Amino acid sequence: QVQLVESGGGLVQAGGSLRLSCAASGGAFSTYIMAWFRQAPGKEREFVAAITWNGDTYYADSVKGRSTISRDNAKNPVYLQMNSLKPEDTAVYYCAVGRYVYAAMWWVSDAKRYDYWGQGTQVTVSS
Image (cartoon, rainbow, N blue to C red; front, side):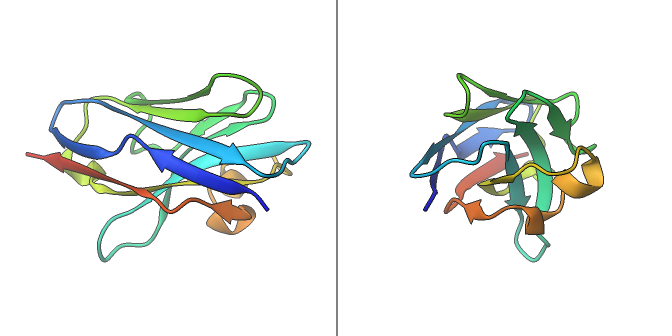
């Protein structure tokens, strides 16, 4: 059983930065993908960014150029550096992990591909 723990959320003014962290424990996929999703009140959960076991990265258009997903070593932890934050970035951010099967945005951005999820960390951007 894989456990994911997010940290680093908080309140920040528009234009500021935050770095989210996701620590994984308890299991492993030989070829995996770790991702960040977010969910704002009253909205669907949406893909933010992902990084694969071999270092490939994917970004949603809404955060591309403002965010960077990275990791310290082979798997743990995974970071999401977010810059130039906007009020519309306000959401609960979730870390997820799954088995990496298909190298395409339509596949990696689908929440159903991920088997394990963290509890989420709140990011609030004030205007």
